[in-house]
Length: 129
Image 1 (spheres, rainbow, N blue to C red):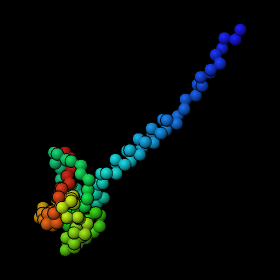
Image 2 (cartoon, rainbow, N blue to C red):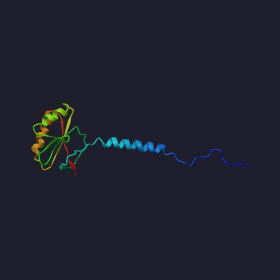
Image 3 (tube, rainbow, N blue to C red):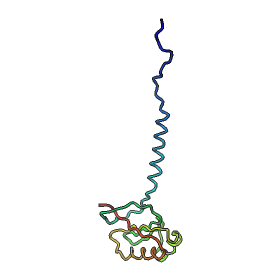
């Protein structure tokens, strides 16, 4: 008398669904991490209590030695307005100011004035405390 079952359960576990899940998580984290684009120039930013992450449209950096950069491209102070005008669409753009904390704020006001004349939103980048 044969009492063994004819339907045998395989002891092997299929990892196909697990690899699909890991791949989807990897793609999700890769896509969401690219939304925050830090400035590539070394600038010592001032600190603030509140800090909000903002998707950058145009980044303007003023270094300690008063060099101006628009999205990591060095521009002169006289060509700054023309460069911003070519990169911004009126009314919908935003300019993120990365200004070294040792730079006098008259340089930041100069860039903010150009941005507001071009109808762009001005955001000052800071480090959280």
